[in-house]
Image (cartoon, rainbow over all chains, first blue to last red; front, side, top):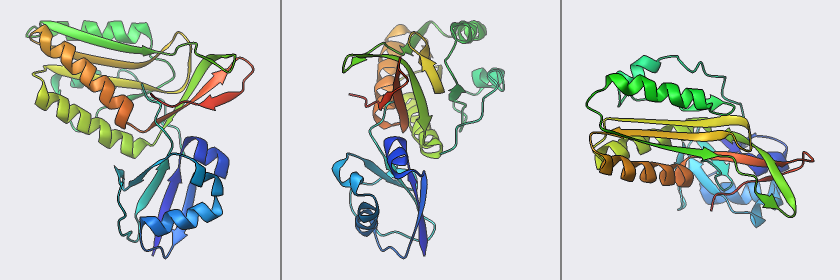
Length: 77
Length: 165
């Protein structure tokens, strides 16, 4: 299974990419752990996580094809 | 992260007046929202003679000073698919809570300079009470929930990423 992770704003800039593919990941917590290892700057920053365009606060299982977004604080309006 | 393509401002504009609750409405505009666009929006509503009140909110880019440097522009970007979903929720919630005739939301993408408009919220109702309340509700909801990101750009072309309070 694989999931797509989209990065926005400062995250995309620091990671030098706006999209990552992650394979064989069980749930949100595991995903964050793996991404945190690859991009340690994330551990020190505030972000919101959306799975399939819905903000998720608790841990949830991930499925093949899910789209996850790591979003820095919003600046709209 | 792809930028939204430039939108033709008048595409479906007449339809917008007739179908207040259509599923997907054009929200993002490339660059600043011009005063002319706002004036034209007002004009277009003059045929809806059951409206007694309009309330218009405009967010303008402000020359904030950060660490001694003055902001000259904001460069806006968005998570498009999620923004559209959230904006749809905002519309549904506002129509449910307030007795509105019409509602329009527009937000800029790309560069908007200080003094230019980046957000335009336009609500109409039979009586003014609803429009005052709905406008505030919608603006606060947008700022809290819609995934729009912004780089505050300074005169020397350096920048910081903006965070809503």
